Structure formats: structure tokens, C-alpha cells
Length: 506
Image (cartoon, rainbow, N blue to C red; front, side, top):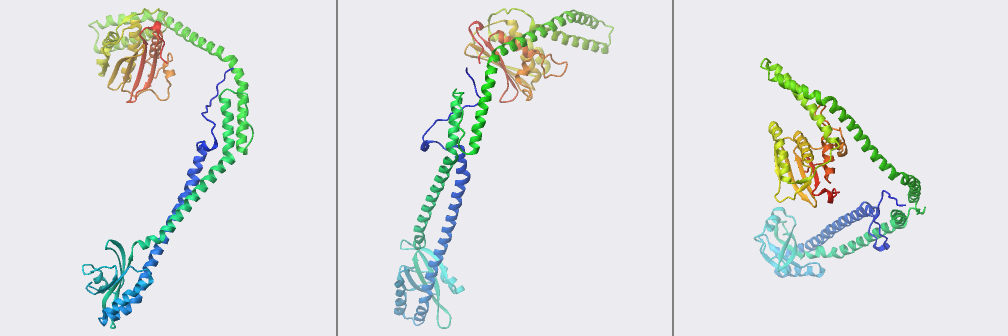
């Protein structure tokens, strides 16, 4: 016995190494692994930044110590104008192996002596002026002989404490970054290994602790979904998973019991309900329509006729004429209600014949013209040429279209659009208004029920759409109601071009 369950599975069993990440694994990676990796990366980045600053400051301090160490002998030699002693003192800085060049300049920035690679002239810079003005050290990066250099400048004082010049100690700018390159490589490699370790530990821990048990439970559920309704899940794994498995088994047992009972009655009950609904509806409508037509038809005609004769009388004043107009308006409304009831339930055999869709629409729009002019609203039609002929009952089709256009006219703000096109073996009639659209709290099924209306009391019988649906079924088609994307209500009335050889589209 075939059964349907309200769940579907697309799970495909794969080797562990090829299985795609589950949502729980992605959640663990997103909210556990990723924050850990970001925090450790930020920690490494901050630590390397601090180490870089510390190393750079240490190297600068080294240059400053070297400069201060030779500034005294160089200053003394400069005061005695002893260039040989100056050059000897400058050459001594290379013994330490950390200096790239050393120079001595006077207070105007003119180089007096040099050793290694340094600036050749500082007279066009502000460094001499700043040192003379402040008496403090200065630092600068510059490019000399195609090399990026870092320079440390110290003032040179004579015995009287006056600044006689300045000394420049240089080293390559790359020395500041080279010292940390190896440390950075090691730090990021360790971070990568740590990330892989965390990732592997989380994924393996998830799979070993819960993932494999969840996969087994999904496999059990897949077997049930594929038709093995007697299969039951094994109660294994963590208590939460085992509880889910037990609940699944209980649900399957309950479904199995109720399904057997439902299958025995479903077909007969559905058919019986459909027949009862149709019989009750048609019996109620038919009896009421016959009673209304019998009891009200003739009196309404008499009332309308006498009111019309009274209106021709010249003795009536304007107020009496308005009252007669009101009487005739109410009589017309009651007559329209009787006519709709008879149109819906009269046992009249259809009279199909070959119809031109364009001619059918023209007839209906011409009948609607007085109502359109009175309302001040516009009807726009779009009828392509070359449409195939339609086999149907012209009177019934005109009645259905008139009901749809009147509904659209009552709902529209300014305009109504009517268009025709073919879809396979069906003619599709589209009617769209620019009104508020379908009520959100009412279903389409309710709108198609006889005597159900959203209009105010006295403005409608609730049979218009029911008549349209009946006409659509008579012509092998169907009626669809929806809200248009650009606003308003969209009505789709499909009619079989040849009802004998066609079925309503699904």
C-alpha cells in the first residue's frame, strides 16, 4: 500500500573524506574556529608590530651610542681642524660592523670628512638648521647612491659648548626589517599549523561525537522516505540523537496505524463529499432561484411598468420623479439578482458554434460602454491579429466576460486592461484593473463560492465569479484570480479552442 510522508531527503551516502560540511559543522567553523583564528592572528599581528618597534628602536639606539662614542674625539679634532684625526675617528665606527657610513659636516651642512656611504651635502636641507636651533639629535631616511639609508645626526660641540658641526652615522634601511623577517615567517607558519590543528580537531571531534550518529539517523529516515515503512532507526549515539531516533520510531508507528485506517476511507469519502457538496449547492440554489423567479419575476415587471407609466405623467413634481427613479432602480437591482440566479443554475444545454475572439470582445465592450462612460474610467484592449477561432456558446461567454468586466470596473481607480493571447490549445483572456487587489484575508476559493461577496450589503449577490467559473468549466478551461505585480487584480480566464479535444490547463 502506497503511503506519503511529509518529508523528503536528498542525502547521498559518501566516504567521510568527500562528505560535504553539514550545517552544524559550518556553524562550528563560523562561530568557534574562525573567531579563534582571527584572535590568534590579531595577537600575532600585534606582537610582531611591538617586536618591530622594539627592534627598530634598538637599532636606532645603537647608532646613537656609536655617534655619541665618537662625537667627543671628532668634536675635539674638529676644534683643532685636524682632518686626519677626524677621518681616523670616523673609520673606527666600521669596526662594530653595524654602520654603513659616517660623515662630519660643519654648521652650514658642508661635508668636511666622510667614510663609507653618506650624504655629500646637507646645505639644502633643514637638518643643520634644526640641530643648531635645538642642539638635539635628528633622524631621517634618504636615498644615496641608489640605496635606502637611515641617518642619525648628532651635534658636535667645542670646548666652550658651542656647536661646531654635526656628525652623520648611517646604516641601510633594510636592516630594520630584515631582523624581523625570519621571525614573521616562523610566527605565521606556526599560526597556520595552529589553524589546521584547530580545524581538524573540531571537525573530527564533531564527526566522532555526533556527526556519524546523525548521518546514520538521516540514512534511516531516507530509507523510510524511499518506501521502507517497516524500517526503524537504531537507538544509538548521544542521548539527544537516541531520543530523536525513538521519537522517529514512535511517529512511524503512529503513522502506520492511522494510514491503514485513512486509506480504507479516503477514496469513498472524497467522492461522497464531492457529490454531496454539488448536490446540496445545486439543490439549494435551484430551489431558491425557482422560488424567487416565480414569486418576484412577475410582480417586479408590474412594478417597473407602472412606475414607468407614472413617470410619463405631467402632474408629478421633481421630488416625485426622483422617488419613482429610486423605485425603478431598486426593481432593476432585484431583477438583476433574479437573472444571475437563473443564469447560474438553469439546466440549459450549451449551444456551441465557431466564434471570432475579436468579435466576442467587441460585443462585450460595446455592451459595457454606457457603464464605462458613466463611471469615467477607461477600458484598454489589446487584441492581436490572427487569433484562431473559438468553439463555444456566445451567450454564456458574453455573460462571463460581462461579469468579469463589471467586477473590474467596480474595483478600478482609473483604468482596466483587457488582452488576449493563445497558450497551446487554449485562448487566454487577461483582465487587470488598477484597484486595491484581492483582499489579503480572503482566499480565492472563498471568492469563487456562490453567494460569497466582498461588496457591501445590497451591492452584489456573490454569483458573478461562480457563474464565470461555471462557464469556464463548460468550455474546457478555468478561472484564476491573483494580484498583479504592478498592482490591482489580475484575472486569467482560459478557454479551450476546441472543448471536445482539450482539457483545462493545470
